[in-house]
Image (cartoon, rainbow, N blue to C red; front, side, top):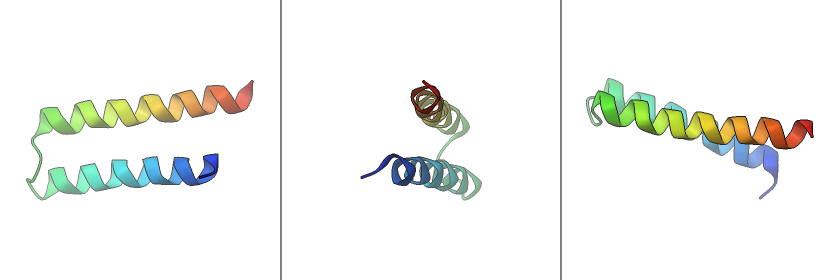
Length: 51
């Protein structure tokens, strides 16, 4: 899997988490934690591609 595909997958995961929250499948604390984890992955990708 190339990096751009990985970023798209991470972004889709964030969207899916937010939709699950809206549909009351996940509670707020879980959404915040998972969203933060995915943000960190995207930040790592940005740092990697800028070096």
